[in-house]
Amino acid sequence: MTRAPLVIQTPQGLFCPDGDFHIDPMGRVPRALITHGHSDHAARGMGTYLCTHQALPVIRHRLGKIAAEGIAYGEARQIGGVTVSFHPAGHVPGSAQIRIERGGEVWVASGDYKTAPDALCEPFEALRCHTFLTETTFGLPIFHWQREAEVMGQIAAWWQANAARGVASVLLAYSFGKAQRLMAGLAGLGPICTHPVVEGVTEVLRRQGYRLPPTMPLGNTPPPQGALVIATPNAMASDWALALGPHQVGAASGWMALAARRKGTSAAFVLSDHADWPGLNAAVTATGAEQVYTLHGSTGPFAQWLRAQGLSAQALS
Amino acid sequence: MIRFARLVAQGAPQPQAFAAYQAEVGPEDGATALRLLSGQRPKRLAPPATLLDWVAKATNTPAFLIEACLKTCPDKAELAALLLPPPTTATAPTLTEALASLTSAPAYLALSRTLPPKARTILNRLATGTFRTKLALPQTGPQTPGRCLAILTLIDPSGPEATFALPHDNTLVPLTRLRVTLPQTPALLAWARAHVTDRFGPLRQVAPTQVFELAFDGITPNARRKSGIDLVGGRVIAWAKVVQACDVPPLSALLAQHT
Image: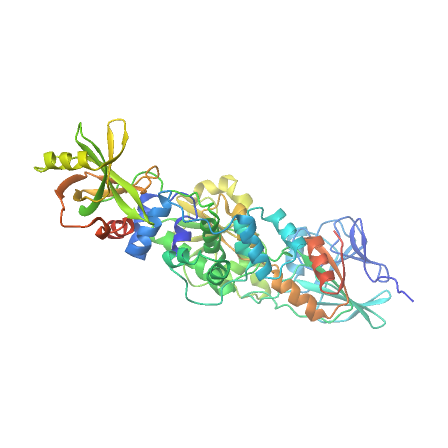
């Protein structure tokens, strides 16, 4: 007997019919389970939100007044005909994989995840399951990340070389996650300034107890001598950037592995909050899943790769 | 090799950056880099598609994945660099050593595995004959005066002006053309008349047996020259009759001493 799937794809996003909830929906739905606070996973307009206690403050900070509830990592909760629990995904602070169980059958929706540890977020936890819905943002064998310490060393060297010339170092990063990972990894090396949007999220995480170094929000005043400024790419296109004085711009992202993406930045650092090719493969293997669905990025090639390894795999988007 | 990749990461290096590179890597790599950045390319090991094929086989990457990767990274030299896992060894070859590995697929693969991806990409461009980066602006830094031996290859008796060449890869590469104002100029012209091997208008090609000592004020890169360089303030000092042409140090030796 074939059993009905625990998770299906709908126009609003992933949906669990037996629990009557969506996972990271983009269209308006009554009940949303949210893996983490990035805007392509946590959108406005849902009836209720459920996410980890650690993810909730940033989601509230970004979405304003919402009906939301937090849940502890590992805490089992019955929703309709399924049992749900959230487990660390190692992507950003509070990020989770969502485990769904029905009568011994286990499905896991990975959300975004990173298997390698960093200085900031809860480390990825491998879960056994029958069906794994994995993200494949970097699901090609050209993506192999260096250890975080090596990349932080490269950034520190760039920062110090700029500082020696009296030039500020402006590092472009997402305001939530990457920005704080950078300040945590570069703490103690010199003054760190932030764009107000970055500072807002940082302050929320600091109040939660995440270990983050002191930072100095920059209004329309120049940064102190030798400072590192963490800003979003949008900020650099605004008037805010005019007050920076002499500066060099660097970018930190997994996409910086590609020369075409490095064009236009004076310094590029390959630092990702997603799993690389070995990480994705190791994660799939660790689940023991017989069936894998792929989402985001290289869904087709990664699914085909898994089929070539003898798994049942299919691209979802 | 890693340092060279950093030098050319942003395209044509500025003279200042090149000078800093030379100071850091020493004469051998400095000379090798100068040749590459002057437009001299090493012999092509393989076309980009072949190189990519070697790496695909070495990493057991199936064809459908290569196809998918090419959509994200259409540059085959870069793709071949990214497919190999990051290096596990702490040692990295010099630029000169890296170039010396471009003799066979196994030698190339063994060396490529020791390099980080950005340096691998540059190695792949060198291996596939697709390295195009040249030095920006002529070098304006302090010049190093020097002397060298060179072989007379052509002479225009009306000047008289003579072309001098240096051995490079089993051939002679023209180095410079200079006016000859030596006391022995009449004797040289007499020798030349007796040893003409070909004529091009007023130019006489002569047997490449006579060696001269040249002096110069400096060396600058020039991509349009086969040698990759110009001698600045070059002049003929002496007819070095005691030196055999086969004993003249090659172009690489000159570059190593003066770059």
